[in-house]
Structure formats: structure tokens, C-alpha cells
Image (tube, rainbow, N blue to C red):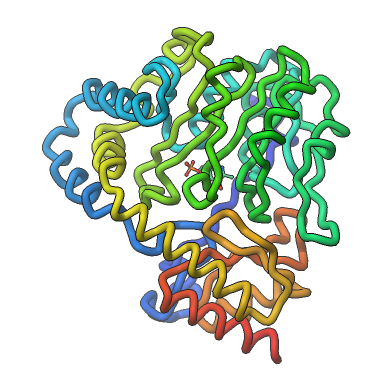
Amino acid sequence: MELRDLSDHVEYRAGRGIEEVARELGRDPSDFVKLSSNENPHGPSPKAAVAIREAATEVHRYPKAVHADLTAALAEQWGVTDEQVWLANGGDGALDYLARATLDPDDEVLVPTPGFTYYGMSARFHHGRVSEYAVEEGGDGFEMTPEAVLDAYDGERVVYLTSPHNPTGARFTLDEVETVADETDEDTLVVVDEAYGEFADAPSAVSLLDERDDVAVLRTFSKAYGLAGTRLGYAVVPGSWGDAYARVQTPFAASVVACEAGLAALGDDEHVAKTTESVEWGREYIHDELDARTYESHGNFVLANVGDAASVTEAAKRDGVLIRDCTSFGLPEHVRVTVGTRAETDRAVDTLNEVLGE
Ligand SMILES: *Cc1c(COP(=O)(O)O)cnc(C)c1O
């Protein structure tokens, strides 16, 4: 048999883990710090770690009650109904559900470039087509503006806004999100990806759902909550969508372990506060101390122009610091450095400054 034509599909290449790199270089994993995947350097919420251990004896059951409990807790947090919270296997899973619920074959979506690869992948899986709007470097850094989105907009079914944006760290204000939603067709959904929302000192676009049925918001437990490995995320969708979730979800997409961890993490304000405080410190530190052009960031990472991203990333790796070469984002001069613990961030900055000085 033949597969469908996958030639337009791109492979998702995740940042390589410490174990993998250490093995390749014949070194000890403890020699490395990993600041390449925007993970939480403080680990998971300790309360979530306990909940995961306790969930171990329940994993022979399908997740039913706990899925409902987490949905209800999130609905309460955001002031929406349970039907508006679409739990999924990571934020990526929630993107799939949104694509399933919106795209007919050959519908187009509009994605940022540079940007998060999975928007386009998910659309293609669902037989959609992908066009792009530019997030371009101007005098003040990378500019995300409604004008850039609307100039490129040509009636696409879904428009993705990443705010804060990966990998530049830029963001849209709520007014700007609203402008895009106002100026696009009634039948265009604006997906606001707030995977880094906890790190931005700005209100969530969820508040727009009180009045609108053309905006959906993506959130995840992978970043601020430190639960990337459990794969837990969700979309908050308009109230008028009714029971659509039941029609598009993969049965039991969020596991018992993930849901228990998520519930516990939601109740762990201390861990989130520690995480966001250290991110605020680290962003400033990298801006101040790194000998390269950096950009204002509202996420848990900082983009830097280092001239030759591939060789700087490689040299830093040999010195034990894993960062993200942004060549695959279409930014061959830029690297993205996740804010680590103080010690990790210090080491990354020292190492990069040495590499850049050579
Ligand atoms: C990390 C990330 C996500 C979601 O990741 P999951 O681990 O699937 O929840 C979504 N969008 C952007 C831009 C991200 O960086």
C-alpha cells in the first residue's frame, strides 16, 4: 500500500535531550545544562510529583472523574463553563482538536513565520493548507503587529497568534488580538496561543470570550507548571460551541496521571511564583550580561543574535550548555536560550560569552 502524500509534511524535531548529547560526545550527563526546550528548570510542582506517585495505583482505570474534576477546576479559574475547556494531550493535542473542529479539506490557515511548527503540521494532518505571515525584525526587535497579520490575511479559516511568541518573545496586546478578530471574517477563528502566558505580565485573551465566538485560547501545563513530560494542555473555546469537544476529542486524551498532576499543580501557587520570579530575574540577567543583541521577551527564554547560530550552538554544546539554534525557525543568526536556575543561567551566559569572544 501507499501512504497518503506526505511530501508537504515537515518533521517535528524536538531539541535533543541531555542523555542523547552526552552519549554522542562520550561525556557524563551531569556535565550538561539543557536550556534548549523552554522547560521548567525547577522541575515539576512538588505537589504534582506527589499526585503522580499517588496516581500510580489508579492507572488501570480510564480517566473519567479526574478529567471532569480538572476541567471543572480550570473552568472555575477562567470563569467559563466546563464545556469551554478542552483538555488534551499537551497544547499540541488541543491544536489538533481545534483543527478537527474547524477545518474542511483544503481550508487554509495563517501561521506566523518564524513560529511554532506544529500549527502547520496539525493543519496539514487535517487536510488543510498553510500560508504565512511574517514576524519581522525592525528597529525595535521583532515586530508582531495586527497590520502584518491582516496584510497577509486572505480569508483563512484559522489565524494563529502566539502571544508571547516563540522564539522571539514578542507579544500581542489584548487590543491587538481584538483588532485581528474584528478585521477578519466572522468565520475565521483566531487561536491565541498562550503557552507562555504565565510569564507575561498581561491579561489572557480568555476575557475576550465573554463577548466573542471567534477566538480560542491555548494554554499548557508544560512550561510554568513544569509538566512537559505528562503532556497536558487545553484550549478555552467560545461558549456557543456547545458539545463540540465530545465530537472531536480522542477518547481519554489526557491520562489519569496527567490530570492528577495538573489538578495538584493548579493548587501549587508557590511553585508557579518561584518559576515566574526566576524567569523575570533570568531574562534581565541575560539581557544585561550576554555579549550579543537580545530582544525583549515575555516568555521563559531570550532570543539572541549571535551571528552564526549553528556554530555558536555547537561550541556551547561542547562546553556543556544546550541552547536552541534557531536556524530551523528561519533565523540562522539567532539562538534561543531558556532561562534556567540562577546557576544554569550564569553558566550559560559565561559559556556563550566565551564562545562569542573567540
Ligand atoms: C511549548 C509550546 C506549546 C505547547 O506545548 P505542549 O507541550 O504540547 O503543551 C504550544 N505553543 C508554543 C508556541 C509552545 O512553545
